[in-house]
Length: 501
Image 1: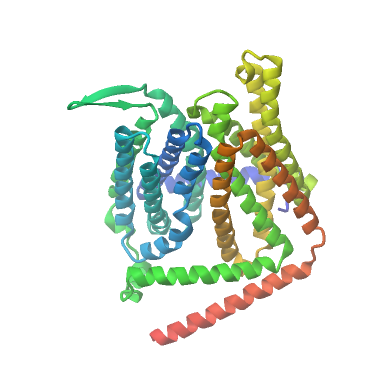
Image 2: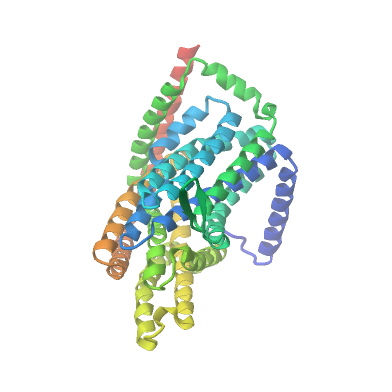
């Protein structure tokens, strides 16, 4: 994270880079085929997050709302753990354009089925969980097909800005879908009833969200079909098909699972060889689990503390997102002045204190104004301020930890380290969400908040002492392991190539 030593050079360089990036973005957006794919991606990811918001709102009802919200998040995220690598290997061998429009069409069907399920039996949440799991599973095929299509639609010079646009839209879609679109649709459509034969059906505001999402998936299908089939063809595609013409989907999936397991083992060896790398992987996974936990408990906090409906979860999530994004912009200066490890320690302490302040504000509201409690404007503003601070604290932990992991991971083994970190985060999310939901239902929301705060402080204490005696020898050992594994892969690839010849 080095910067120019002379302060006068930084603004000019930064301004020049920004102008170059904007020019690159404008140039790549003039590519009609890429523009259609990018719009389809932005819409599909946004509405997928909006559907997830709608599901959490529907199931977040007392007395076990937190537990059900945790199950909703698990249903949304679980397919990525076992199926992402398998789906990528299968998509690599079939027509990308077909995968893109068919996956959007199938997700349109699942959204309509979710709407029908709510109409027929609103209390049957298990069918909703199953349909959301299926929707997310279909998305595991859409994502690699989309990523593999970008190099086919743009030139080599346009590839970097094209990938940057897709990464930006992934971040925007989460905020727009979960924080904006879901809340707006839930408030825009009033509840209504209609007759179908002799039976009356009642439609809540949130139910219409699934209909809107289904319609927008059709828009995505049209956008993909508007891209000519020839645009997805390339010389390297034909070579790849010729090389793997004997492979089928089953062998591709089996090979993907074998490679995934081997990468996990190698990644673990690399991570354990470097104390700072191991610390950053564990800490980054913990932060990811914490973000999912906030999403699970937001509805419970809104209902039990603020006495508002779960549709108002944006009151909780938006200030935290503002703090997170705002601090991310200024994080480079923070790291330079404070240091990465010290900044993460400060961030964890601020997170623990902020979580404790939330139930403290509830008590203060009832003490000052027993009649209105937390519904008073002053307490609501206090909650918003605390949530902004929590977002800033999250950035103070997340961004330096990501940077540390990227720097400590050997270049030849970085992808395996990232895959391992994702698997640890995904595997840790499920038991934590289940435990938090059950704990909130059986014991209470406030005791869980104190338990989370104590756990954060305990991890902070462990991390501080664990990283104190770190030597460069650990980094050299990690590099050696990664280089040995790379040589083994190259030898294996040479042997396979000789066998094919």
